[in-house]
Length: 273
Image 1 (tube, rainbow, N blue to C red):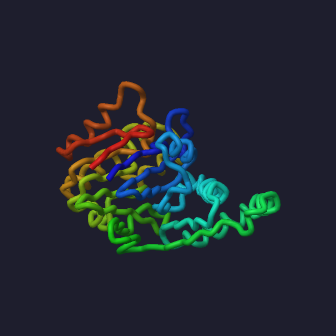
Image 2: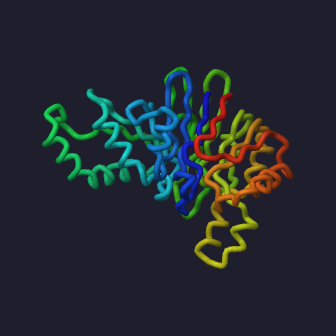
């Protein structure tokens, strides 16, 4: 199982970090978790493409996690010379979101059908909405979903990938909660979006301060990992982006609560288990 943090950024644009997205490769299958800005550029760097995806999994519908979904839908459709339905898995509300995305693309779909004789219908998308339990299982790879807590954004889910006796959890935006504890229990790898509280608190803007109450911090994510007996912890979606030379400070936060390996991800960081 290979985990690639394609994009490790946040809603704050960065020249170095694409929007939140993570690729999981296992046994010839490719799963994309979230699809923030620039995801396909990072996929190209990782030798991945929209037509090859087994499924896209969304943790929640915040714009920074889904803003390139329309590009993935279009690219898969026009880059594949045969019918290639796209599976999108996400929390309740995903079906309506995808329907509205396809409505937004209606003009473009019409232009392409008019221009290409071999395109006779628009993109085919299969949406699976999940709350708790099995989100995907093909006999080789099993993906479990559990509710997380990103209120007032609701519902939100995290995912646990299981294959070949290994497990990896990709949680998305959430504070510690029972669903998250269920997912991470005994996991080999736990990938968590995080903020660094002491840095956020220094920003004199209420709208920025508001993010403190619905994201895991470097320390609370480490505590979740320790409770679950996780082997390796990966920090992504870093807010604010670490200043050069301060990376160790983020790792030190975690080390006070978690004795396993901690990785501060950059775009295209790869971890195999």
